[in-house]
Image 1 (cartoon, chains in turn brown, blue, green, cyan):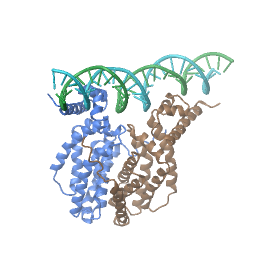
Image 2 (cartoon, rainbow over the protein chains, first blue to last red):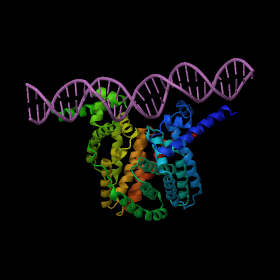
Image 3 (cartoon, chains in turn brown, green, cyan, purple):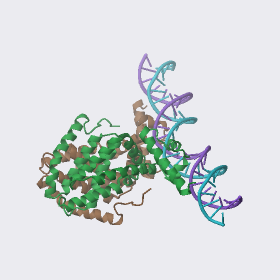
Image 4 (cartoon, each protein chain N blue to C red):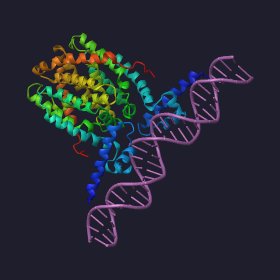
Length: 228
Length: 228
DNA sequence: GCTAAAGCTATAACGCGTTATAATCCAAAT
DNA sequence: ATTTGGATTATAACGCGTTATAGCTTTAGC
């Protein structure tokens, strides 16, 4: 005899579970609120009662998956500077395990009139980056005058928009990694002490070479034929 | 007696004109394809025949407005480094003249499942930044090893995502300007020669102070109460 | 065990972007 | 001047996210 709250939670879980299953199976296409309700064995009205909107459901799915990333992150041991780049590589690796799924969720959570994109990458990721910035500054690798919030925000944003480009199918995972690494290298070097800059500088040239290689096939300005 | 092509072009213009008028009047809300068709005096099917989609229409509106920005940009005379920051300020100024309109257009062009956001800020802006990077490098202010495409792309992206945050109503125009300036300062300093870095460094602290002031009211992590 | 109410269900409906289908119009080629 | 054919029209329709309404199930309080 389940209590009221338990039954509600069970329905909530069923909806999230069904959402994950549908996403993994068919990706973004064919995932509608009606299909979700049917797959979860509830009425179309129930997801709205329990979550409020499709986007909120996608955010919940994203949160569930994000917990795993945080676990891996905690286990990550690296130098105060290398950690920035390894954290990116870790995320890329996890995305690569289920790319279709992550693309679909990101797209649904953000793309569909999603005005809450800060909620997706706002809190949890931002705080991580901020912590690392503080650490690197304490290690004397970043200028002491650097404001952790400001730098962490720039890093988050750069990460976020590259992920978006990947979710929209405009770049591959490998280019995503190189791009974020490159932007991170420049941002961090711009905020670094002489000692820090010396450590970051060697990263720049190889990253540029990788990027140039990507763009050899698909040239950068990418569409000069719009001109509508 | 208009020729066939003239009539088509007249309809095209009528649609764009009506779109601009509707956007300026009511903003994003209340702007639907049906309302647009009625305002332009054409059938609902015509915009689709002539443009293909709502997003394409928004891009056309955006392009029309962008020409003005390009004009101003060409007239901009500044140092090889200062030009980056002045170009940003110029865009902010133009946005400020008709913020509701620009927000609505950006939102419609990008937000509604807009997978073509590279088209919005891809070509025209990207090429501008690339040109300035080349110039600054030739002036000995950026490292000669810096690849113009890679840096210009990072700059474009950073600009773009801040504009998006503004369009989504999450930050004001003044914070937009400070944020982009700050990111630009770090990115450019990271790519700069010693001489260039010396010129950029003084910008950083004041920008941080401005940003900190913005965040004094609305704290950065911004929503710890989601936890759905 | 009974009553009251909370919450889910089924269902219809709204406006949206978009597409399809026929009817119609009108410049262009003969 | 007549025919032809491509484009525009009006209109219906589809699926989408979302909301509203009314009925029913089931839990909580007595």
